[in-house]
Image 1: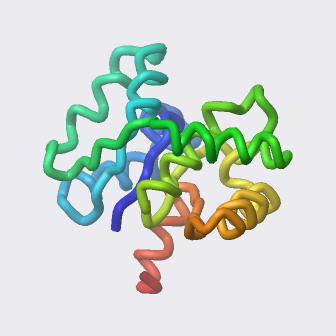
Image 2: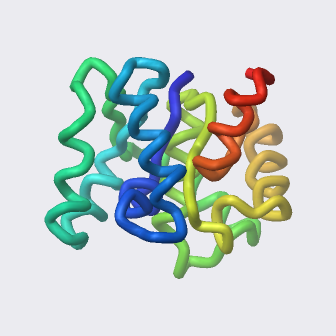
Length: 155
């Protein structure tokens, strides 16, 4: 399973509310059970984070990371999400994360951002736009949901 992680998942390893599930997801990457999809956007956002958060991704072996990059197609899709009201311009980076995961065929996008990303109404909007434009739908879940699915044997 290839899991696109946004910055909140990485920072979640150091947040009391989210650390249990973020750390467990990182262990899945570390032990080769899942592949971390890591974008240049996430790395850019990490530059503003504390040192320990920036360093967290370095724990994952390079062969367990799929590096992806913002390009014109990603920007166009992110702008579509905004034009069609799924997000506002203030959430441009969130739109880029969703477009990156969609266009790079992530199995799931993982985030702790419940306002703009892991939000059922917004997910429906992202996926309706994706389908209309000929792209696949994207699964969007918190790390807890991803790990619970695996633990219950439904994946």
